[in-house]
Length: 115
Ligand code: 5GP
Image (cartoon, rainbow, N blue to C red; front, side, top):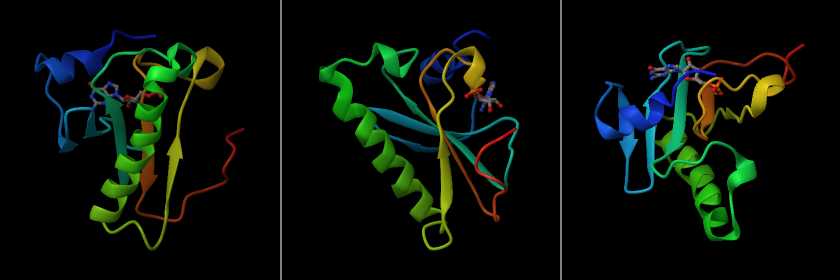
Protein backbone atom coordinates (compact mmCIF):
# COMPACT_ATOMS: atom_id res chain seq x y z
CA UNK A 1 0.00 0.00 0.00
CA UNK A 2 1.05 3.56 -0.57
CA UNK A 3 0.10 6.67 1.43
CA UNK A 4 -3.44 8.01 1.25
CA UNK A 5 -2.61 10.35 -1.58
CA UNK A 6 -6.30 10.96 -2.22
CA UNK A 7 -6.74 12.76 1.13
CA UNK A 8 -3.68 14.82 0.24
CA UNK A 9 -5.19 15.69 -3.15
CA UNK A 10 -8.51 16.70 -1.55
CA UNK A 11 -6.68 18.83 1.04
CA UNK A 12 -4.78 20.57 -1.78
CA UNK A 13 -1.41 19.17 -0.72
CA UNK A 14 -0.99 17.28 -4.01
CA UNK A 15 -2.12 18.23 -7.50
CA UNK A 16 -4.56 16.24 -9.60
CA UNK A 17 -6.68 16.90 -12.66
CA UNK A 18 -10.26 16.95 -11.40
CA UNK A 19 -13.14 16.60 -13.86
CA UNK A 20 -15.89 16.86 -11.21
CA UNK A 21 -16.15 18.00 -7.59
CA UNK A 22 -18.98 18.35 -5.12
CA UNK A 23 -19.19 18.32 -1.34
CA UNK A 24 -19.11 14.51 -1.21
CA UNK A 25 -17.09 13.37 -4.21
CA UNK A 26 -14.14 14.31 -6.35
CA UNK A 27 -13.53 12.69 -9.72
CA UNK A 28 -9.94 12.90 -10.93
CA UNK A 29 -7.96 11.55 -13.89
CA UNK A 30 -5.84 8.53 -13.01
CA UNK A 31 -2.14 9.35 -13.20
CA UNK A 32 -1.46 6.04 -15.01
CA UNK A 33 -4.46 5.57 -17.32
CA UNK A 34 -5.35 2.06 -18.45
CA UNK A 35 -7.88 3.24 -21.06
CA UNK A 36 -8.51 6.46 -23.03
CA UNK A 37 -10.75 7.51 -20.14
CA UNK A 38 -9.61 6.39 -16.68
CA UNK A 39 -11.10 8.31 -13.79
CA UNK A 40 -11.20 7.77 -10.05
CA UNK A 41 -14.39 8.52 -8.12
CA UNK A 42 -13.22 9.43 -4.62
CA UNK A 43 -15.36 10.26 -1.58
CA UNK A 44 -14.20 13.35 0.29
CA UNK A 45 -14.89 11.51 3.54
CA UNK A 46 -12.04 9.14 4.27
CA UNK A 47 -12.72 5.48 4.65
CA UNK A 48 -10.31 2.82 3.58
CA UNK A 49 -12.55 0.03 2.40
CA UNK A 50 -16.14 -1.03 1.90
CA UNK A 51 -15.74 -3.09 5.08
CA UNK A 52 -15.65 0.15 7.12
CA UNK A 53 -18.90 1.49 5.71
CA UNK A 54 -21.77 1.68 8.20
CA UNK A 55 -25.48 2.04 7.49
CA UNK A 56 -25.01 5.80 7.96
CA UNK A 57 -22.72 5.96 4.93
CA UNK A 58 -24.35 3.29 2.77
CA UNK A 59 -26.22 5.88 0.72
CA UNK A 60 -22.94 7.70 0.09
CA UNK A 61 -21.59 4.63 -1.69
CA UNK A 62 -24.73 4.46 -3.81
CA UNK A 63 -24.34 8.10 -4.68
CA UNK A 64 -20.79 7.34 -5.83
CA UNK A 65 -22.28 5.16 -8.58
CA UNK A 66 -24.59 7.99 -9.59
CA UNK A 67 -21.68 10.43 -9.74
CA UNK A 68 -19.75 7.94 -11.90
CA UNK A 69 -22.68 7.60 -14.29
CA UNK A 70 -23.19 11.37 -14.47
CA UNK A 71 -19.54 11.98 -15.32
CA UNK A 72 -19.60 9.13 -17.88
CA UNK A 73 -22.57 10.74 -19.60
CA UNK A 74 -20.99 14.21 -19.40
CA UNK A 75 -17.99 12.73 -21.25
CA UNK A 76 -20.26 11.09 -23.86
CA UNK A 77 -19.50 7.56 -22.69
CA UNK A 78 -23.11 6.90 -21.80
CA UNK A 79 -24.18 5.39 -25.14
CA UNK A 80 -21.15 3.20 -25.75
CA UNK A 81 -20.67 2.16 -22.15
CA UNK A 82 -17.97 2.10 -19.54
CA UNK A 83 -16.66 -0.08 -16.74
CA UNK A 84 -16.54 0.52 -12.99
CA UNK A 85 -14.01 -1.34 -10.83
CA UNK A 86 -13.38 -1.39 -7.09
CA UNK A 87 -10.17 -3.05 -5.90
CA UNK A 88 -10.18 -4.29 -2.32
CA UNK A 89 -7.23 -5.48 -0.26
CA UNK A 90 -3.97 -7.02 -1.33
CA UNK A 91 -5.41 -9.75 -3.55
CA UNK A 92 -7.75 -7.23 -5.12
CA UNK A 93 -4.77 -5.07 -6.04
CA UNK A 94 -5.71 -2.05 -3.97
CA UNK A 95 -2.81 0.40 -3.76
CA UNK A 96 -4.29 3.56 -2.26
CA UNK A 97 -5.95 3.09 1.16
CA UNK A 98 -8.89 5.39 0.48
CA UNK A 99 -12.06 3.94 -1.03
CA UNK A 100 -12.40 4.76 -4.74
CA UNK A 101 -14.12 3.55 -7.86
CA UNK A 102 -12.27 3.30 -11.17
CA UNK A 103 -14.21 4.41 -14.25
CA UNK A 104 -12.76 3.13 -17.53
CA UNK A 105 -13.94 3.71 -21.05
CA UNK A 106 -13.37 5.41 -24.36
CA UNK A 107 -12.67 2.14 -26.20
CA UNK A 108 -13.98 -1.42 -26.31
CA UNK A 109 -12.49 -2.91 -23.16
CA UNK A 110 -11.03 -6.41 -22.94
CA UNK A 111 -12.12 -9.47 -20.95
CA UNK A 112 -13.93 -8.58 -17.77
CA UNK A 113 -11.92 -10.73 -15.38
CA UNK A 114 -8.20 -10.20 -15.31
CA UNK A 115 -6.07 -13.39 -15.15
P1 5GP B 1 -6.04 1.00 -6.67
O1 5GP B 1 -5.06 -0.04 -7.13
O2 5GP B 1 -5.75 1.44 -5.25
O3 5GP B 1 -7.47 0.58 -6.87
O4 5GP B 1 -5.85 2.23 -7.62
C1 5GP B 1 -5.12 3.38 -7.29
C2 5GP B 1 -5.02 4.21 -8.55
O5 5GP B 1 -4.52 5.49 -8.20
C3 5GP B 1 -4.06 3.63 -9.60
O6 5GP B 1 -4.76 3.39 -10.82
C4 5GP B 1 -2.99 4.71 -9.75
O7 5GP B 1 -2.55 4.87 -11.08
C5 5GP B 1 -3.68 5.95 -9.23
N1 5GP B 1 -2.79 6.92 -8.63
C6 5GP B 1 -1.73 6.65 -7.81
N2 5GP B 1 -1.14 7.79 -7.43
C7 5GP B 1 -1.83 8.80 -8.03
C8 5GP B 1 -1.68 10.23 -8.01
O8 5GP B 1 -0.80 10.81 -7.37
N3 5GP B 1 -2.56 10.94 -8.75
C9 5GP B 1 -3.55 10.33 -9.48
N4 5GP B 1 -4.37 11.15 -10.17
N5 5GP B 1 -3.73 9.00 -9.51
C10 5GP B 1 -2.86 8.24 -8.79
